[in-house]
Image (cartoon, rainbow, N blue to C red):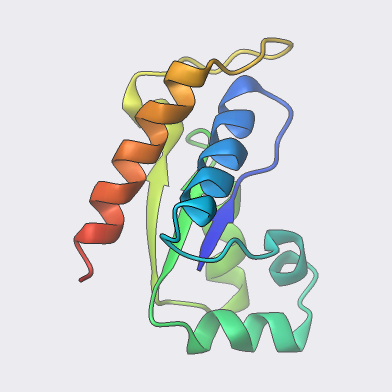
Length: 114
């Protein structure tokens, strides 16, 4: 399952668009990070039961990872968009190239678990 940051900066948009593209490529199913953050029992259990969860954070605040940790979900791999050399900027749109770069990195991360 794939979970994406949903902040307001460009790196959050990269995270979201990359997750959607991965889903379109049948690399996994995008799932609701807000549901985990809200503690919705069924959603938390679904994440715990997944073979693997990919958490795509936008920046080093690691909000998505922290949601997983607080929910007690341990079966995840995390990647961070800013670790790919993409600078966090508010009020700036993500580029297609940035999204592609994140998709490639996510595919590599997913490949580590198979």
